[in-house]
Length: 489
Image 1 (cartoon, rainbow, N blue to C red):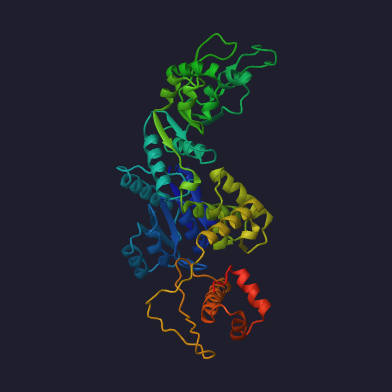
Image 2 (cartoon, one colour):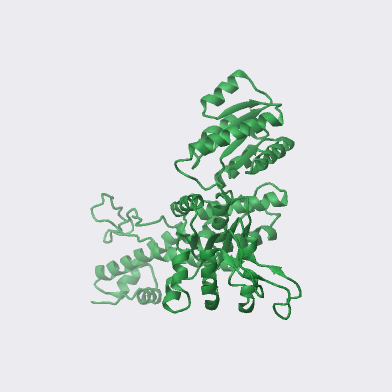
């Protein structure tokens, strides 16, 4: 299944082309401005872009070079109502797939769409790609998983997704289904962690009327519903041990018997499973059957945590905030760098699911904001960001030192010929400090150096020290105590 984007200020045309894409078994989105279209292209993966030339905020031809730089860049078809020979030449020489003049009939658009998608399919045949517009990111860990999922989709073996909670295991499972030969069949989810142990057998295999006290009518189980499609066992590590042997036979034979039934029924399903548990450890603990684990491990894909995905955090945040803006029917919001930095400071134990939940809260609580700032984030994230900031400041606190022989010429104080004050340019070992931090640190070191040299110059005579320094005796003693300087004379 391919993903098609239409960028045109004619909403009716956009809806028509999306309908045509869906008619061909693909998915489609549209944007009515160049800025919105480019934003969607950066955040999502598209196979084909129908791009208008004259848009409210720019010329579509000017965006072609940027589109070509995108990872797995889509094919571009230019559509315009102001077609001309020079424009067509510029478009083709810029590397677009085709150039279509408006108005055109639905049949013409459909023909172009069929051809470009066929071209795209043949182009990627030797290196299958995962066409799924809800998977956002191009970090190496997530791209590796997408390549693995694309290969798994082309095979017939079962797939096991491993990863922390919230990493997108169900999303990838749906992507495997959508890119497989079973895409037109059902995708049935079994949440093993949510089914009461007393209802597992009935939920999976169904039951006949009167099979137990509350069975007032027959019910079809989830295994039967998955016939011709994909059966997704979410959190398979929570499947009760007593049921694992029975289910192993169902996987092997693709037959089952409803509770209270007397006949074996068949279901042609493909099994995809997922868990955040260590199944090997569960096997060692006697809580998971090893033969079932072997059966599940046809094709294993381990999804990375959000902490391992680098810049994908920023891409995910902007993608989801833009999606929320579209859902609310308002323009996309600006996002400050400080807001993104605060997101990076947090560890995200709930991964992408937790991130999206936080962004839901931020957006709905601050719809009126023109730009999202750290103040809009939940308190726990702001506290974490502040703690990280303090920790980094302490770790990277600049050290000020005088470099001997640095070539800096000392300046001699005019107030006393007995005393030479050396003022050198500071050398910053790490980050450049604020002026306040620099002043406090430099003055502190200067005072200590001054007092030590003062006492040495007057041979420890406190009366002379007070006279030359211009300080009262009490103030001089207070400074010596502050810096722990003792007379040695």
